[in-house]
Amino acid sequence: MEAVASVQRRKLLIVEDDPAMGRSLHRGTRGFFEPVIAASVKQAIEILDSGLDVAGAVVDIGLPDGNGFDVVAAVRRLSDVLPVLVLTGSNDPVVINRAHALRVEFVCKPFFEDNLVQFVQRALSGKPPPPKDKVASTIAEIAAECRLSIRELELLKLAVEGIPRSHLAEVVGVSENTVKTQIRSLLDKCGQEALSGVVWWVRSRSSQ
Image 1: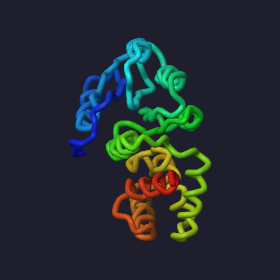
Image 2: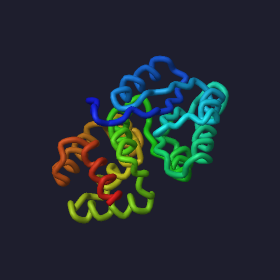
Image 3: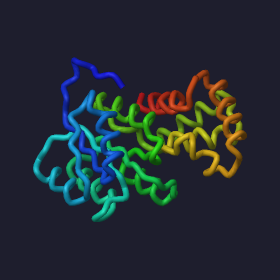
């Protein structure tokens, strides 16, 4: 991602206990924000309680002293609309549903770069993520317009939810080659070159 000089650098809270992942998130966002790193739930809540003005937060779920959703809950007590991106190594539907209930975005680690780019763009725009029902109706509209198959629609839904491309075969229970063929067909029908482009299209239309 390339920095935009005219954008005022605001604080972005990054809650991640893995040093290598923390550095990666720092590199991926420092061109637009001044990242503030916390390695635990306690540190993150202390930062929030200090009154630091943050533009958004990127929060790992698995932390040494608790659950990242505790941090998200603290963020939501301060703001209903502050952009939050949740990172997790799990694609458990319970985790996904809890993320949606707290009105945050969700992505599986370690393959989060495209989602991080899109999250930063939305955080800079100042617009909250679109409601889940609006996203669902937009996906249905695009599926009808582009004549997506049932499996292509399923893949699109999973990608929009934050499941990375590398995990899709595992989630839907088919071979990597089958998923590659289905994604290629999905991209052709939608006129996009990458799955991240289709996800961005869905989110953009949902925000209109």
